[in-house]
Amino acid sequence: MCNHTRLIYLGAQKAYEGYNYYFKCLECGAVLVKLSSGRIFKIGGGGAELKEASAAPIMG
Image 1: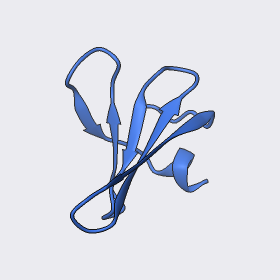
Image 2 (image 1 turned 30 degrees about the vertical axis):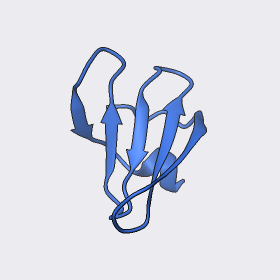
Image 3 (image 1 turned 135 degrees about the vertical axis):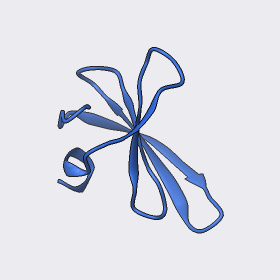
Image 4 (image 1 turned 30 degrees about the horizontal axis):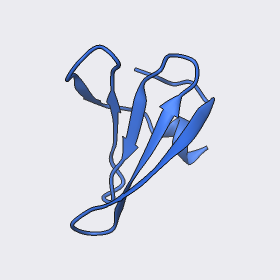
């Protein structure tokens, strides 16, 4: 999991309820997605792997 704190905000996407927010880690290249429900997922750079991630870097 990516627990790095150096993130860049990529933007938001309108979801069914609210918005999803996208961040890219400047250290490992992973993309973190914060869903409108509050859940956070990591999308690895190597393919379609989807994992629930720690909220620490985004909630900081």
